[in-house]
Image (tube, rainbow, N blue to C red; front, side, top):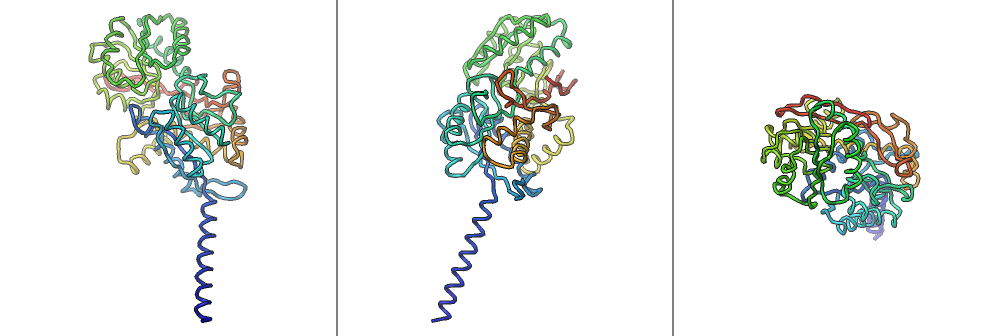
Length: 393
């Protein structure tokens, strides 16, 4: 009887020890939730961002994790799909926070989805880092009036300024620009582009808008080609390669600019090498990567064994910046994380794969809660890269 009692006590002790050790292990893990478009027309971007974020966390975890107040933590990513829907984005945020225990949310690249996620994180007191926005200054974007919200992607109107300057130098005979834009509120950026073009002796002669979610661009580009442009500017669209393909199929041989951060590899793979002539993009030339870029590309090849997508660089940086903010704050408290990000406001305070960066936006958005980094610009002729560089906005 005593032996049975001792055995039961021993078993209970072992179970208690196992449970306690499991609790300790669980407490030594930080969960970051990502909410990205993993399905739908821009899933190629969402999947690349998810993978870039995941690979950066794997690197940090292999190095021992992140230290907070003398204690090391592993960082786990749990990914959810926006499904290009505010409702799904909101549900994903609630699930990540309440079921998975996420203390930080990263993601969102469409304004309606970003707004839905932020409504949840604000209510629940969770820090939210926007991956990117199409429209800087949109009501869904950061502002001094919105607590615990930062953006880890640059403002796209920084890139179109650089693109127009480069266009004027590279194609001095070009005079007329036609803008292709989704009908989701790009008016402010269109007006800014018109101003920048005018300063360089160019004029925007027409703006052709199309419904977000369009997949057949031939009808859109019949209208664009009819305006007889020297230059077509595909404004902030993950469907830039499909627009290029439509333009070339209709016989347009002029300059095509796409200022979403999609590299020549994606344009070549989708539109074909022959279409990539007189093409200017804000994606990275993967043929000449930096050492850190090569590290990311090698990790991708080993882990996924699929063609690399340069958008993953953006999330690789995003994860690194978040971890740096946690290190400065020594806390997961959203107010402390926000303050930590805002403190990185001097040139070079943030290292990115594109070069030295900083937190900015006080003059424009009311707080230094936006990443400012060098912009990639790549120029292709006859399917080959003839120029590639990183330019400070």
